[in-house]
Length: 218
Image (cartoon, rainbow, N blue to C red; front, side):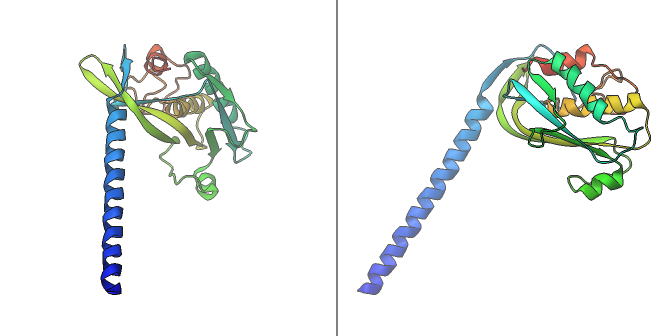
């Protein structure tokens, strides 16, 4: 008799666990669907080769800078500072160069390939000028003409700029470019005059395409 009761209790527990699992899956699916169907508005332009765009739900964001080496020809810290200033003027959010704020939501490290790899945040090689990794969550869908673009909210961004014997202007471009990714510019521009073009150039100033593409979601 006791054995039968025990078996019945085990059976009930299994049923309850199964119900809880199914409820969780249904809730997760429903939540994702609702977020994906959220209408975020209409975009006026699109210059990226990616169908996604992101933004911060912040009025102000700090950018921490960590120059790993002491190479005076490595224009990293000032490059990030100038990049912050350009994007600060471009979008409706304050972008603050904060070299002492180690808890900033955006962080950049600069050094040689070996120094960056030894630091441990990234694994890069000599072909890389810079890298940015973002943490994001789905916010909804933007409309652009007859197409739709996925919109995301950012929660953190961390990146690096590689010291590889380039010119000051090339470092300026890389710093502004990587900051663009950290602020939500996903993918790249197909125009070589743009900061958000995929390859390294000597361009140092944001163009109207760089600005308009990102500023419209802020």
